[in-house]
Image (tube, rainbow, N blue to C red):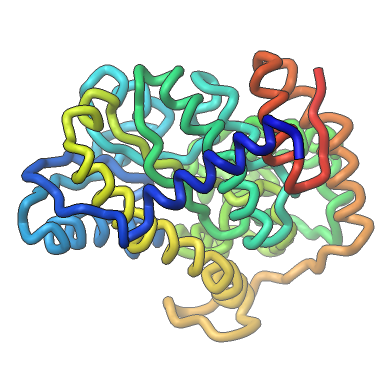
Length: 354
């Protein structure tokens, strides 16, 4: 093992130890204002809001108080919350990493189309890349502290048009969930469209777009099954990781004991449960969209499930290696390319180069 890999392993071990409940201390008195991700989706409703709004105050015996809202409730699009955090407007915030790539292109390399075909690989990638993300947040956002990385369910394709496989997306207008997803769609011969999540159902219904990418359960919760007919379950948009960070001044104002306590609580009572739910939420999302299986969240839809083939995976991997990784490498300094190769590249067997 080379020196850099040894350092990465040591960093990961240090993070794990820092998050261990056995090392956590009692917190001091503190208050946090938290701005979460989409208010209508299960990640916020089932995990973010209960954790920040209820668990943190209760687990701290009232020593920590919180105010909780979401970026959409504030009238924001999601991409600006880290900037507002760095300007001391927001103390703690979460958003989809892809929303912030114009400010921090390093974030793109966390989650690319088909780089992690299953949730187990997705978590290995996220954990490997975490020290790199932490440095990127500190550099890009005035000393911000990375707190958590969690996934939405697998980001798949909803079409209001008949498709039989990945190649049928050629020539279609497809709402992408991020820049690398748009590049992937363009490599397939589709037109990647940028569109706010909340605008998608109307655009599908009116024929402004043919297809759109989001998580299975997110799509169900937002009624996409009512305006689309075919569901393609390949994770074309990856896992749309949501990253939580704290304003650097706020983090540094906390005692070491409070920092350790909060890190342990986040890992045990937020990150771990969200990752554990990703597989089941992906499956249930598909069941709720298609009627194939149990749906505990309401009436199931009747979308047609399009099965992915081995050739689809092969084609996706080819575009990842030939187009997406080289394009990303051109947008960042060589340092970040090297660190990606030593972390995510080591997990996936892929290599990025300029």
